[in-house]
Image (cartoon, rainbow, N blue to C red):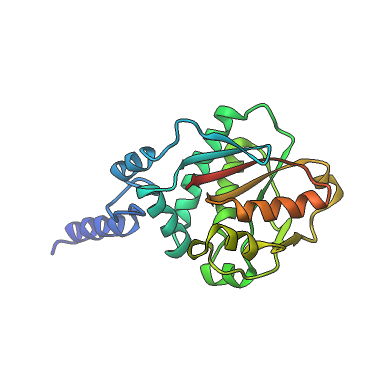
Length: 221
């Protein structure tokens, strides 16, 4: 094989190896998702993203179904952090569309227990929150809330069991200082179903005198 042709072949092969693949269908893509899967995700987007939960606004980007449910499963169980970065940006844009008047807020992602985070490789809610803050310009407070119990997976439990499962599962982190405590908090998580996890985390913060301004999640069941 001619040297120039060989070099061209190797360059093409290298570009194919480096080129990202869609996080859902594995086809070549320019980013986290190919155009087709991106369109499918957009079909899950909620036209009315704000609801009120315990007198607090909850922003949900999409409905927890079909492609969005699949994408979040890849994020949580298949080590695809790019999905979290992508969906966090989507959530950030949705926030700016409806809640762009506040800049003095602190974003706190719902933490995983350290054993589960070590096994998973990351906390998916923290990934979402990072991209969310990059888009919104809000301050990110990682490790300000700590999960002290490695609770059972919520999906297999009844609504009542879910609240019992996560009761007193959180405490304030060592880095939650007085300057942070003076600011209202936005809790960020991946999925909102019964609200048990969010309720437990919010209760921990509220007992410490920290005001919850609102909640932002990628998907609502």
